[in-house]
Structures are given as C-alpha cells and as structure tokens.
Length: 93
Image (cartoon, rainbow, N blue to C red; front, top):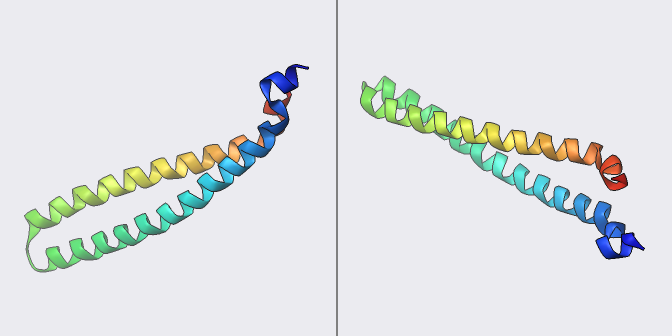
C-alpha cells in the first residue's frame, strides 16, 4: 500500500536512467575538458618558449581551474558509481 503512495516501484528504474544520463553527460564534459587542458598546456609551453612569462602564468591559472573542475566532475562520476552499486540497498529503505 505504501509503495503505491511513495511510488517506490519506479525508484530503481528512475535512478538508473538518471544516473546513466548523468554518466553520459559527464563523458562528454570530460572529453571537452581534456581537449581544453591539452590546448592550455601547449599554449603555456609556447608562451614560455617566446619569453611571455606573465601571459603564461595567467594561462597556468586557467589550467589549474580546469584541473580542479575536472576533478569535481570525476568525483560526481564516482558518486554515480557508488549509488548504482548500492541502489538495491537504497530501494529496500
């Protein structure tokens, strides 16, 4: 009776589909971030080679920010995996 009121019958299905959509989106974001990081690294190297150190330091700050945001996205991905692994126990509660 409570399952109908709380709509628990669809809990696992909705969670799985939401997590799969999230993981798919994270993969696309990861590819984009990796290409931006690769570009920034090359740009920093070129700037340092041309003795434009102040510009290179600015790009390094941007690279540092990109790396931090990427690590946050990786953490979200790890959380998705954790939820998927424990979905059965969550459904029981």
